[in-house]
Image (cartoon, rainbow, N blue to C red; front, top):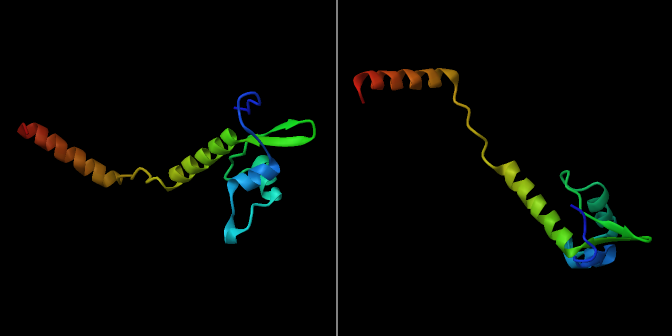
Length: 105
């Protein structure tokens, strides 16, 4: 999904750096970091942008989508994986289930 310049609130790179707020140690975000978010991305997720003339813009809404995507990716990374049941235990569970069925339980 791209930026809708008619309906979204556009931000220049400088405004994006200020909008994001201070980073590590209270320092403002570098424009190089902003360009990295656009061109390379973070964990494979890139910040949407558009170019009008020679100026690169992003939007408040694109920043929100970027933050949401990064949050979702982080949550998926730390979500508990499905626990694989060893084959021997699965066979034993199936045998017990058959035995219970045979007893009518």
